[in-house]
Image (cartoon, rainbow, N blue to C red; front, side, top):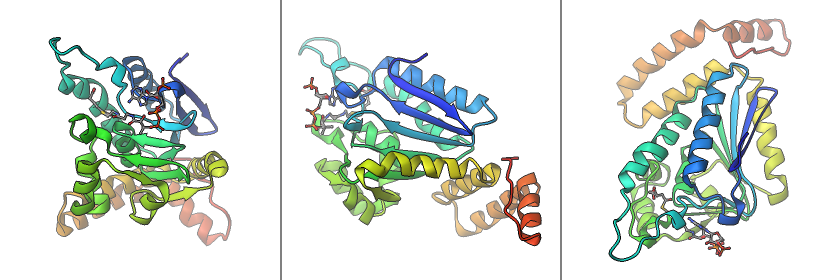
Length: 262
Ligand code: T3D
């Protein structure tokens, strides 16, 4: 069982809750290891059809635990590249490659890596009182966890640059207006809305949704022509799924489809 996260799988939905509320769910080595292990469980368990990521307490995630980075003036400095290679990049790659929708319910402040982990998820809901901060610049660092790739695509280069260089706190409502997230929710409705969406996805054509995820991700670097070819290839795969057959049959029979995620 886990100490720094909570993890449960219920009716096709895996819920991973960051659980170091005293430090606003900042990442230490143990939390990285536990998140990795939970994501392995998600991948292994064929019943899981949606992942919901959220946090306990008043923060979503404050990024790296800086108490693990506090060194005396003459002491050896930490190799952050190693930490990123071992911990952060694999996490980001797993979330993006996971063949199901990944919902992030941002329950409070999301700073540094915490913000960019949220932006890498497929659908982001945020409590109205939540906020996003590219905190890196304030301690001399560079946005990581894919932020320098994700942010310009979400908000354009002008806003991405200013957000990254100023480290201003952006309210959830501003983030919604700028298209950084899907939508805001009333604070006390966030978890229910996120779970309802996750439960909805757990009844949907999982393979088709995974292919949509691949297509939208690939569009960031593909030309229009390449994307047409990719759509052709992905539609070929989608057209062979059991859920597509069921979807068409249910439509023709004027009944509700029963998707199995196959
Ligand atoms: O190192 C590597 O491996 C490379 C990777 C780097 C990735 C990164 O994420 S670098 C960026 C690290 N994160 C930050 O710089 C954010 C630091 N936190 C803050 O700026 C503020 O805490 C917030 C703006 C997020 C929230 O502010 P506020 O005023 O609401 O809360 P607070 O009082 O600052 O924090 C509450 C507690 O959480 C406090 O502890 P205390 O005083 O109650 O004992 C604070 O120290 C602790 N806390 C918050 N963030 C972190 C943290 N402790 C350790 N590490 C943190 N990142």
